[in-house]
Length: 121
Image 1 (cartoon, rainbow, N blue to C red):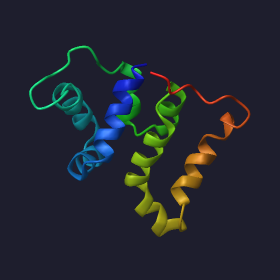
Image 2 (spheres, rainbow, N blue to C red; image 1 turned 90 degrees about the horizontal axis):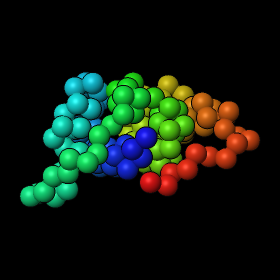
Image 3 (cartoon, rainbow, N blue to C red; image 1 turned 180 degrees about the vertical axis):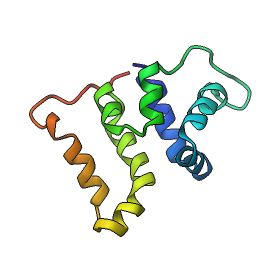
């Protein structure tokens, strides 16, 4: 797994309302766009050709599969905060405060007695 590149995706998208909106509306198209034109940017003048997403990473991002991302070693906080940005309001209206966070924790219960995957890059 390219933990760096997945974490860069989570960090970048979570902090840009336009990116987050585009990711919510059309994840497949946005992930492809991000990987081709946004992710490789190092700064305004330089681009990297070193990093790319694996097929599994790409699919997990397209599917909003935060459990798979966690299991692949995506940074826990970046993973959680981005999907809170996507799911918090709908869950709040349905089930009250911290509803999505509780679901996130419930879906990761099988990790309760295991060591968390390393987030080391």
